[in-house]
Length: 506
Image (cartoon, rainbow, N blue to C red; front, side):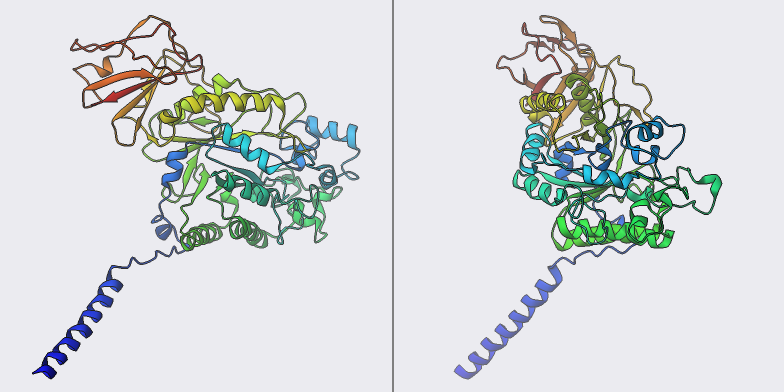
């Protein structure tokens, strides 16, 4: 009898273990592998939670083009286009283009004042939750330690790994890393057609008199003198190198994907998403215009924004400066109130702001820019709960401001808002609504907000109290009317840049 009991006991253990293993195998989630096809890539979550929460990032146009500091960041191209002011400026100040080419600026790009730790602190204090460099602009110069591209910031110019140093400093300060790529435009695509030597298809105009036509193995990589098929691989290999070395949380592309083989773009996207999967990292790809299917990445509208609430998360890249995306002589800047109010409009419409600054060639950030960033940071700190970790409200807002068209779709990024323009966000749990007046309302004024009346009553639950962020006093309101909802502005009026009412619901 004891033997029979022992046998049954052993059999139950055996089957119990087998069932346990079988259950574990069945319940263990299968890791999704992204194939280089749009169908497969669409399965990736293009809108990571961290980006929905972050709302605000900073990047910078800083490179060899910062040395002449003239015209704009397209100096590398314009210095080779007769009739452009940069062409004449270059000849007058540096000599003929055949003698002093763009690559001769590289030793002058010294970056001796660059301090990654200091920059990371500046970005964080400005309120950014992610930041990073223009890893490579159209000019072919890589701002990282590259084995693929001989024209890089470690082997030449600064002799520093700009992207590497920033990656460490940003992560140390709990900021996500973005790296942006603009180099799809670098390839010389019309060298066999003299009528199109200065075509927009390529960044550098081709001309047998200049270095831009050089077939020297090294110079050709800077000036894009590479057969298209080889260039597509060169383009891919550089992006892959940054992904492998620095693990960016977002890679962002400044359009021109129509110039790159679609299969190579798909290969790059699948490589990035699979690598992130292996590292258990939530990442996304920023793109412009129609460069990617909307399900594959985050669409960016340059220097503008949506006119309506976006169903999908989206982004806009805007610049702090007025004359150029890079530092140039006589640069001027937008005021903090203009920048902040337009940023609020983006946040209210389910958007993310990527703000560009422009350091000098020596690695200094001009004081005028630092002043604006400090004011943005001070406002963001006081009103943090109405920005970060929030979600769009039922409607983005209303008001009389007239928004002009943006150059790349949507509306302009420099709309003149006033306190009569209202925007909304809400907490993730829906228990708090934040009402932004994009200016300072008149003290003691009674404002009618029919949106919150009993007839419309969008909050969906009774209001518990209303306060203004940055102040201790409660705001008086009258909700007794069926059609109207009256809000009395306190005597202090609120904030000069934008006043935020916190509406707590029961």
